Image (cartoon, rainbow, N blue to C red; front, side, top):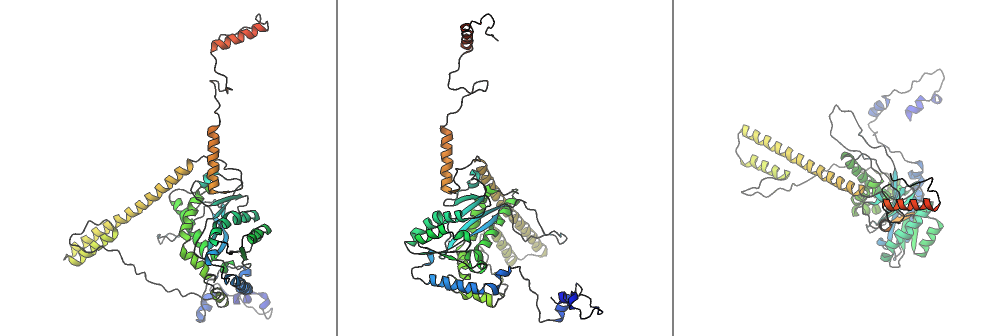
Length: 467
């Protein structure tokens, strides 16, 4: 700001006074002259989400949700948070790698396909996560997209790949309500959403009122602090998915399409949607346990967490010393044997050196074997998955816009049964369809032709060729 003011012509007191703008090293010199200052990296944030603009909204939000959560009929297992997130099919995450100090590259190869699939997720305050709704950016369902078994999942397609009022209504009626009604046992359920118009259509609100579902919409531009899914789950979910994409890329699969999505997304959900992360999301947003200060204190006095490096105190799983040790088959047992030899055996300098060289070679061999076994396991897994996926013929699955995984399976079985029961067209030797008439011999065909010529009295002009 100081450099900008000094560089501005409007700050010059006189047109005759020459004041040069600061040089490129001026900030470093200014920082050294003022030890009371510190450097800080700031992130870009929409001004509408800034603390001063959302403080009143968050106060109002906790006043409303606090009254609802204080109801004795509301239990944590009936409090849900839903939100949608977009997953880029073919984007990998960043990695930390060891390279030569002469290598200046700071990137790696990646696919260029950036198709986005939307998933609607929801979690409960008692640390559960339920089946998602997947939105394909397409105009129909295709069979290879659901080769990986996902019982209980629902799928819908839309041209944009995003949710709308129709999809949100279907999700309430066919996903949330059936899966949570039995647990609620006629008690009210709270559904916290981001307050978008697609999530609060008149039809959707009517269904919620009829089924005792209390809709609680978050204030605008506050979801980054008050929505559990945004705070603690979607980030590790996307990180896990990108890591799995990177594994496929290392295995030679450089184009991740929709046929891979359900497999990778299912694995990513199991990695990210842990009970610890779900509890962290509800706790950091001050909802369960109910503690508005968790959020309000961040707005009033943004605190920088003290990052204290902690030395990992990992205890190796060492075998107990015995008189007769087995042959080492793991890195830990090899390390223990080496330590025992060095401590309990009187070796001269050449002998100690030889033992160290032998141990280093064995450790390297163990490490290479572990890496190769893991690579082989992943390659076999990729091969089996690819074989299963390619064995499925790409067909249009049903005509419904929204289908559950079980409905897709039934539609495929119905289509296969219909094709199997359809009569196969028989073809004669000339490639023409035979309409059910038995094949006749050549002599019979010649006789029929001759009789037709005689019936018309044209035997003087035509005859049946024997060729």
